[in-house]
Image (tube, rainbow, N blue to C red; front, side, top):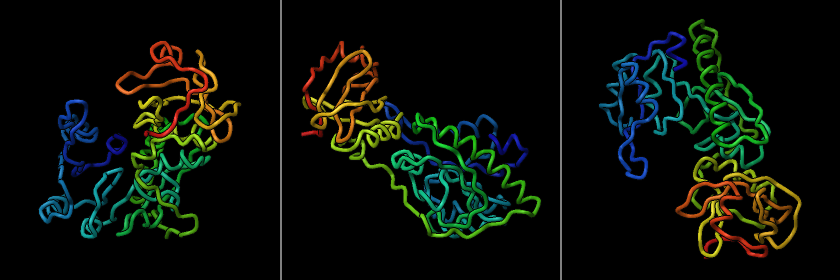
Length: 294
């Protein structure tokens, strides 16, 4: 959208093939595809760019530059060479910190105070290419994945337009990445949704935010999964996982350090509910313990 608004010609729009989504698991178009169809832009959905036919289709457009944002498919070396100015990636971290698939979640989980957008010239490595521009963004104490993603998306849109303007003016310069402070943002595994109550409250509160709106941080009680969608750290002590208090303000649960007060919860098969409403349908008692699945 930002590229169109800035007057750039989009010779070809690439996005992944439609994927199953929703309860019916019906193929669903990506937001990129929907926009391309709405604006009558040329669209291409290859399953891989390693296929010679796909590369030929891309090369035929004779692009000045490839702009890549969360594409989700590896670009082979040949693809990186097709455009005169190479491939410019919009990456949601301050590289070399958080290279990889899940930079936003990892920044939240780690308790980083800031993140940002890096415009990078792609090479054969994983987020290792030269840096063109970086734009910093403070992480708010109440940021979750969705809110931070939205703010970074807006910042990234402005950043790539500015970078292309610099490129057109012949002023764009790329600087090699250093390795100092490099870290890798692994894709979140299913096991990481589990809350380990032996950990400090601050760590668990960050996990709740990092996994919202999906897949949600969870624990287990009476053999049933319970998801915690909103929570805050409060004073409290007890055996980790023990329910200390239950009330309209939330369910207070002892952690390895401090306590976590969950104000929005969900039981398996149910809806996300405020604590007071959740407790009306799922009575909890002080002294019960949450923990891992058994």
